[in-house]
Amino acid sequence: PRATDRRAMSIARVLVSFIALCASASTSFAKTEPSHVILRGFDPAQASALRDATTFTCDSGTRTIAITSVNDDYCDCDDGTDEPGTSACAGAGEAATTKGMYCVNRGSTPTRVPSSRVNDGVCDCCDGSDEYDTAQNGGVVCENTCTKAAKARRAELVNALSAARRGVKAKAKASRYAKDDRRTMETELQDLQGQMDKAHSALEVLRAPKEQEEALEREMREKERLLEEKNAEETKSTEEEEKETEANTDGDARDDDGERERARENDAAEETAEETAEERGKRIAGQWISDESESTRVDDEDEDYDDHADEDYVVVDDPMSAEDTKTSKFSALFARAKRALQRARLAKKDVDAGADLTSPAFPTMHRDAFDKQQRAVDALQTQIDQVRASVNRNYGPDDVLISLRQQCFEVKIEKYVYKACPFGEAHQDSVRLGTNTDGVEISPLTGDMMLKFTNGATCWNGPNRSLSLTLKCGDREALADVEEPSRCEYSATLFTPQACDESAVAALDAELSTLDRIIAGAGRDEL
Image 1 (cartoon, helix red, strand yellow):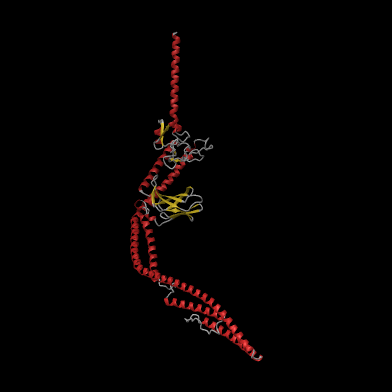
Image 2 (cartoon, rainbow, N blue to C red; image 1 turned 30 degrees about the vertical axis):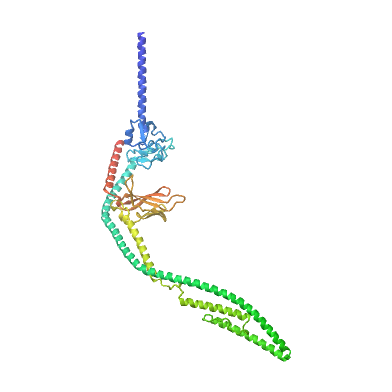
């Protein structure tokens, strides 16, 4: 029995040891999981803080998830910070430099890539760490090019550092003229305002004569209107009288023709019994000659009336003898002459009253002088507005970019020529990319100076074109790196000495020193 007990106790101890060993192994495996999978894509500082953590906080501290939910290929956080090592949160927070996948790039400079580029089949990190899942990226295996990239970057840094030092000197030289440029603009504005005061005074001197001239014209045109109304009434009255006269004349003429015909018939009847055939023939011939002579005389009088229609005749009621002129033809002629004489009298009244008011010769001397001075005032105001806008524009800290206010820069990229005037307009060939109206802005992410051009030409079924121009340190002005990251939204870089300062030189120098240490360390590792 004792032997049996000892064997039982021995088995129990073995079981306890096995269970403890399994628990230890399980704990050890759980602790190695974050360092291999969960911490992928985090920068060293973040990875160190998460190494022993059991939870993960995101969305500015408003959400907490289990550590096992990090890099599990599911986007739990709105800001996308829980999936830096996968593409699950593609598009969330990629604009911020603290988000996206962190590439260690051992032997070169660390970088970040948007999470959308993780396992997309393109090698973005020089160490290839962004393409770790060959099953997902189509079997792409990235070569480590960090040493080669580091050497290329070092050459860039050496050139950039040299250019920055030259830029600092050029900026110091140009800054001495910045105050002079502002003083020049302010003096120009003051001079223009002085000219405007004088121009306004001259305008006021011309105002009174101009208003008197306009008042006289209004008075004369009112007289013209009244005279036209009076003439219209008289013409209407004359026409009505003519119609009535013609009607009466036609009736009288018909009555007179009847009486004359009856008288002739009576005379003919009385003479017929006594005259011989020869006498009757002479009488008829004489009557025919008399009628022809009367017709000729009436025609001559008609022409005479036409030739003297403009004279101021006095029209009598009936200037002809009742016996010889009361014919329908003469009545019509009489009415016609009366109308002509009436119009002549009205025209003569108009001339006597000085009614030719619509003539271009009407005096406008004072009004013309006033209008000319008004145009000069308007042009001067436009000039003042432009200079005032230049004075009030933001040219950056200490007016650092004021020397660029009247300059433009061009670069040809592929088939397009891009042109940017820092404080004016930007173009792609003849297409306007926008206008800079707000002056200099400071990027909240990088601290770089920026110029934004907005309200450019409208894209087909799209927004208005725009350009964001970032200023970088360089030893001379040069427009470069024009891109179109979004449809009709362009970005570019303007290298200029005005963006250089001692801090930029120090930053480049520090990066170069760091890179030199990295390259040296990578060389020792290879050995």
